[in-house]
Amino acid sequence: MTVLLELQLPRTLDMWVGELLADAKGAEPALSIEGWLYEGTTARRAAEQRLAAAGIHARFMSAYKPLVHHFLEHVDCNDLARVVVHYPVHPDAPPRRFALEAYPLVDMVAGAELRLEPQVVAAVMPQYRVELQSHSGAHRVDIVRAPNRVHVDSLGETLLSPTAWLSVKHRDGSITEGRRESDYEALFRRAIECVQGHAWPDTEPYFERLDIRVDLPGIHYSPPHETGFIDTQEALHEDLYFSLMEIFQRRSGRPEGDRRMQPGQIVPDVRYSSGTIRLRVAVESYPAIAAVAETAADAAASPIGADIDCDVPLAKSVAPLAPVRIAAELSRIAGRRFEATTRQGRTVAGVYRAGAGPAVIVSGAQHANETSGVVGALRAAQSLAQRPDAHFALIPLENPDGYALHRELCAHAPRHMHHAARYTALGDDLEYRDAPPWYEREARQTALALSGANLHVNLHGYPAHEWTRPLSGYIPRGFGAWTIPKGFFLIVRHHAGWAKRARQLAEHVCKQLAARPALVEFNKKQLASYNAHAGDLPFEVIHGTACTISEVNRQGPALTLITEFPDETIYGDPFILAHDTQTATVLAAVEALGLISPSQ
Ligand SMILES: [Zn+2]
Image (tube, rainbow, N blue to C red):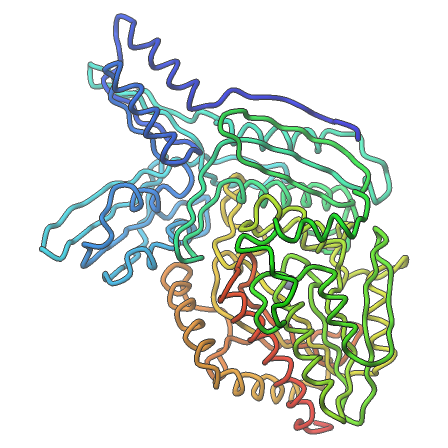
């Protein structure tokens, strides 16, 4: 391991308290204090009490999602009849930025009428104006400030991002206030500067593993419903991962959004600490592949029990499957085995089952932090294997290196979305790999060569709660449509000349899905939250399922059906609904293939 940077930082909250206590002993102590920073409720209340004991009136707010924290900490959501939130529209942010940041307010005040109204602001500091009306008729107006700064990021883009802020009111009525870079922001900046300034080799991959280990206190709010999950450690992982990807993308000379770059494996490992704030940036070799270690991690990777991969039937799986379980379930399907070897040396295993029916390729975990597709692919293939004419190639786990990293990260943070585990150990998206060595991509090519399939059902997922980049403009760059969940939906891609058959496929699959009440209810609920915060869905809705159909002339089968279930971070019954849906979609697609016209 080569350490590029290792440092400790003082905790911002402690520094502020120390400064204010010293100030209180001076000739002109402050009248009152307001501060915003990346700290949880308990730490902020404790700091307020310490200052109160010294006669200082202080209020500390969350710099991250201040409106949501205002409701959590200062509003009785059960007593609300009507809520109107006038959210700020700032010239340096997308118009709906602060409506998105208010997510999931619509779920928090469920039962009350909620309106989100845009309000153009010229003020330096954006603020929300909140009108609250209780059942008893009481009316109140709260002003909720949202400290942000305009800054130019490492790509030269101007962004508006949340920041820590300290406001001191003096005895003569004057106010001194401004941005104060917090520990959270400083760690991020130092990590980015370190990687950006390092002398990397001229050719990819630049490293095997770039490990960014962070320990710091933070906000972790885990409500009963998944959509309300709020976690600053998770957000820091996401911002570090995508910011570093963008830096290497630029370095490689490839255009923004190109998924072929191969810098190596970037691993932000962001953990809670009760006080110490530490950053270590290091370049390492890939960790050794140890089947035993992966099995041992399984228990830790599931927050709801250790028996997930023993006797539970596949259809009842409540958490992502262990690799040993995936191999065992795959071995139950008779057919011709094929495999490929990953960059790290793991095996991508597949099976080809010849039959009289039209051929289909079924795959899961191209993006390895999207885990319900693995269960769905196996369940659907086991069901198809019972039919005499079934004809399919199955690759349940396309990206085992990413999957191993996902399990490693889940062992200490099972509810984080972990996008660092999305791509391969080379850092690219295997679907877009267009030059040898092929590694895991070879399995898909073999599946196509063996089956000659015209349809690939490619099972995916996306975040089940809000995905943010708080230090880089808040809304994930390039993924603006994915920031909050919007139910299960489909992406159909087809070659030229296949438009009519693509439409028939989508129609049939959506019609079958409409007969699943639990899914219909789930989609309705998530779409309502999505519409309240993000506006209209940019997709067509077919029989109640959102679907987008487009012509894409890339190599591979003429038709591709991509599923998107908001499965990142879910366990238990929600996970079962996810793989039930994935399974049903594969089976409906196979049925559709037998029905659609052989030509235009
Ligand atoms: Zn995906």
